[in-house]
Length: 155
Image (cartoon, rainbow, N blue to C red; front, side, top):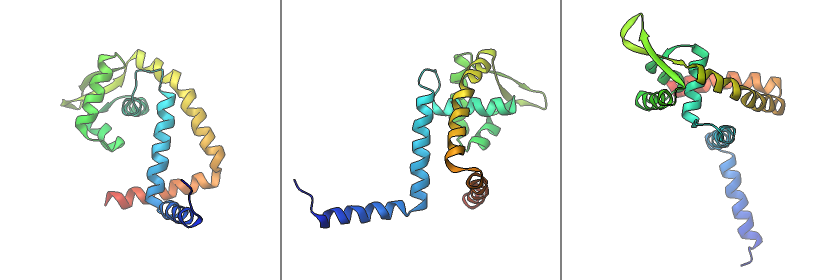
């Protein structure tokens, strides 16, 4: 079947319409980044959610499920399931919170720390590639823009 120039022009117009929609662009870029991250995790027992959970735990050293949910903007039940899955793989541990007897804190186990040490260079290379692609000024502007978007969508 041949495509006419009129049909091709209509398709091009539709693509331009999508590409001019900034929220569509954000969604598409987020999906591309997720797919790229999944490739970096292929040889590990981690999903994207469990990797992000472990990265957040690594950053804070010990953190509650509720705080993980807030930082990851994810439902506490999903965070709890992911943390239990990681604990079953000996990648995180749970311990009591000395300031609140009802809360448990999540920490990386020795195996979890080793895995994150192995993954750090992969994600560092990815981050450096993005930074080189965009440049310092665009990155600085993005941080300002992201802060504004977080405020906008948090209201």
